[in-house]
Figure (cartoon, helix red, strand yellow):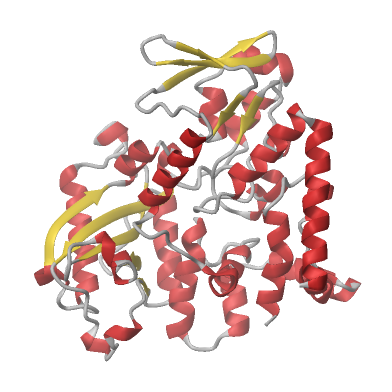
Length: 432
């Protein structure tokens, strides 16, 4: 249970601002302290843990597993962080698998859209106002302080307490903030944002299917009762490696693709009419296609014809595992990396905002000077997938940013509140 203990020891670090030692230690309960010492409680254990973290997903999988049929799909899952299995310093990708056991993964009933609606309801119940279709074009800075935003059409919204941004750091500063305002607080930040943040050109092509019946994996004697909604398909670790490498140089992976697919209606029947199902498929693909710059959507080379041609290849591969997929398909929607990036507002189609590699994690995410949610510009705060602890739907970046925001605005009262919550958590862990 080494990996479970390691994850349990790290969760308090995820759920606190990365540079706040008090907040981090305040999150630990007694069991997590025990797990922490069991993993790094001596110099030998500490060095071994650091060495493990400097390994690649491939190294870890080869250490813990023998059979390729296990290592291949697990390497595909670890590579969801946006890097090939062989990349060093990415053992965190393998560790994330332990989180699927404890604390576990969950889906809101009704899908992620239902979670959004619940949050909207909560905000409105507290007197908040949510505006949609208001494209922010400029952060308004007055005397080194963020005072509001300007949206398309020229309308301005003024902020009394501050501005919190959920987009990636590069767009926030390089596209929405005047360079002179950035240079006034940090002359090096503009260039560091341009050159130090890494996106390796890998994103996904997404396929959504409406199905007349669930997928049946009859060729491999898989019984339907084992189908819990998520399926990983990969032939070998080397095959996953090649897919990543091709994306990096702008090539579309070959006709025998690895993929990650989810049939959410298998767990939540409310997502489809009775007897019907929904399915989405992720396929590694480059954002910018080599030798195609200036063509297709946003100059990426992606066209409707190309995305559907690639989707056909993915479905053909899936059909070798689930032969009924084509017959069961009622409707299909394909989103190219360029379309996905445009819909999600994700820079270069990267839904993590920036790659989830160790050099861009924890107090390096997205840059050391921006890693604690408070930016060098007064009253301007940064949250979202591009901040600690990273992408997915955890709520942690938002919660951590909110704590920093409140500590900045109400340092004394927030410190007392955090201390009270920490004591309550510790007492609860000791006495049950």
